[in-house]
Length: 116
Length: 111
Image (cartoon, rainbow over the protein chains, first blue to last red):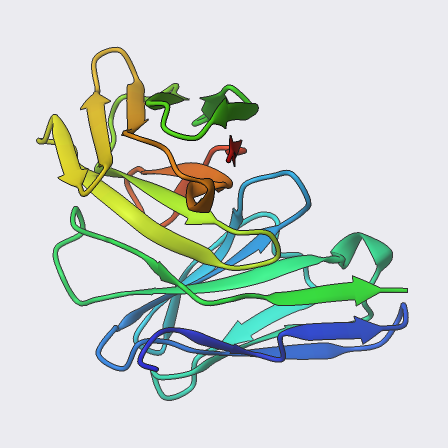
């Protein structure tokens, strides 16, 4: 399977714990995006990487959230001191190296986080 | 503020019907618009991508149109099947690298 993969698929944690999610994009894609989706809503943009550089961050990304893409390949999203409001589906997408206007995004299956 | 809305929020049709899903956006300065399908608890599957210079795109039974001046896109599904049941999301790309998503239309096609 050469699509975007995410691990774990499900994560249940207690409030106050730290969690880390991983995303492996399609191999030749240099752009990587993180989104958060709550029930009944569309995904909301969190952050964007071009290669290893984090170029955009949403105001939704509080100080407790950090994302990295150290070698320009896989990415991790860490949430520190989780809160119940962090419960959501976290989606990763990647996009190939093309002009800015042709940015078709390909999504992974998501990681569903439940904070108890 | 750049907002994307989708109407209707939910739709139930009998198998075989043709149907139209609507997407509206407030800022017409878009780069492109992408339609996705999402099955319950799953990620998003890309259906069609329309560039700002294009008026429509077709893939099989799906046809998406784009009218930038009125801030609208429609997704037309011909001869609907129960397997088409899912949530359909539109996403608009503006300057920058993020997409702004609508809330989706939940479609049920009844056998």
